[in-house]
Length: 159
Image (cartoon, rainbow, N blue to C red; front, top):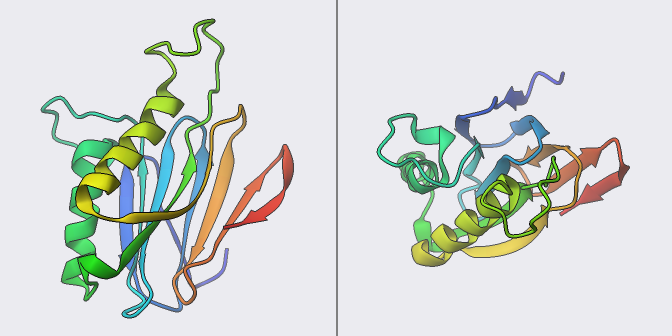
């Protein structure tokens, strides 16, 4: 692990500036949502597990509480909301339940939640690597906004 890497575990978030690299491992049905302000270089990454909190407290575990919280934390570090752009990774369908639209397809629901919330917040999605049936690791470089996505099932992808 590089000294500039900051690891974000499941149901956690982090905000940083260069030279840091925000890293999250094991994105299956979970989403790694990266937000970036190219002017201030403030970067944020959340690894959330579920689309809705339904009143539960763990902010970073859920899209509906975690994404707005991450935006607020980035603003505290100097980002401007109007400058934020997003990249989304994960949301895989890790298990087959038969019905493609099943409530059990957490990955798809997680990705849809990110898109809905980002639209409501007025944040443009620049890129995504979601869906399919395999896990991912993402490395988010605060100096450039670039994300490297790796998986055992395919070559490295840069978004």
